[in-house]
Amino acid sequence: MKDMDRETARRLVLFSLIDIAVLIVVFGALFFGYGAYVDDARERAAEDLASDYAQTLAAMPYESLCDGDVPVGADCLYAVYARRGDGEYEMNTPSELLAELQPYIGDETGVVREQVFEGSDGAEHKFLTYTVRLDVPSRECLLKIFVPSALADEMLADIGSSAIPFVVGFVAVAIAVSIALGYAQVKPLLSGYSKQKAFVNDMSHEIRTPLAIIRGNLDNVLASDTAMDDDVRESLETCVKEVDYMTDIASGLLNIVRAGNKSAGKEGNVGDTVSSVVDMYADLANMDDKAMIARIDSTQMALDRDKVKQLASILLDNAIKYTRAGDRINVKLKNTKGGCALIVSDTGIGVPKGDEEKIFERFYRAENVGEIQGTGLGLAIAKTLAESLGGTIRARANNPSGLEITVEFSRK
Image 1 (cartoon, one colour):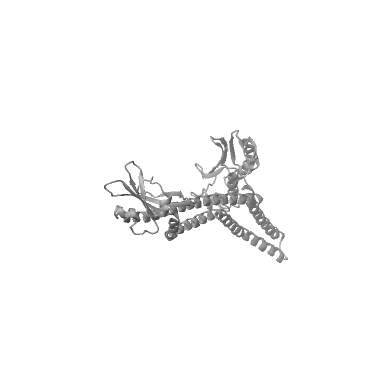
Image 2 (cartoon, rainbow, N blue to C red):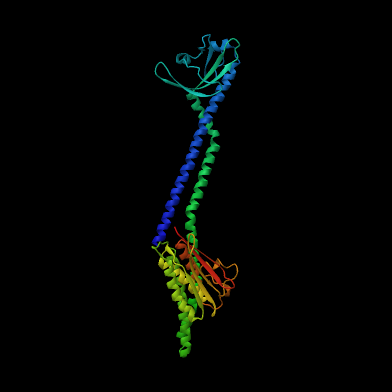
């Protein structure tokens, strides 16, 4: 249980870190995107204001521009630059501020630029500037519009309404990401809850019938004053069998929980472990008139020996149980390119076609098992053991009959 708690805590921490990292990336990208959008909108607004004003002024006579006899344009300032014979520009402006600052021309036409000038009192004056050419035949003339930065900043209030769709999209993306990551965090817990619920349901179903049988037989024994010894013995033997059945179920479920804990072993010869299990079960097979043939390679791997032994025991016990007298069981442990493979095959009753994956489910028993006793937990435990050892397990029909189960382990 402690290992399970640590694993859950580890996954929650991992998901939380991923959640935080993704949110930082998403919100960072949206934040910088919004900032770029605002800056661009600010420049576009200033450019529209300046260009409209510039077009209005460009239609006016040159002399009127120099004299300042023109319409006032939304607090924008302007200056006219005319090239003299020495190549320098002469500036004319009706603005006392620009006359004091004497801003240089120096910008390409049709582009918004930010310029900063220092006044005679040391104060800083910021402008967004926009330059156009004037159609004056006698000389080269340029018209430069100065939009005070304070005026440009006031335009952001108007930009706010147009930014609403962007903000809505920002919030929608944030919600979607949070829901997705939250689901990723909760999903393992929901899966664990579903498995626990299924476990309770399975246990309730499997234990209810044996308990009813035990209670009924015991009631019969207690209620009968004249019961014969044979009757009493038969009832008690039935009770014992049902108790053993429930004990096997409880032990099997406990083994599944314990087997699920991942563990690593020291480097050693896995073949020796498998061989010891084969020697033990070969005698049991001979007693039932069943042949066990083994071919075990020397395999050096770092695997938990106890789990390997338990896994091999389950597979051999299962093969003996479902193999008829006179049939045979083959056991192989062979080296592979990436690790090793344990293969147990028999010529017994096999499983119905299409049920090869179902046999690893808890409490599953094929329709053809007949009166062969079992709890349906053995191969479920085997699968849990194989996965806890970092391996995989699969089953397929054996030729000409029976079942073949292969467990593969990889070297890390």
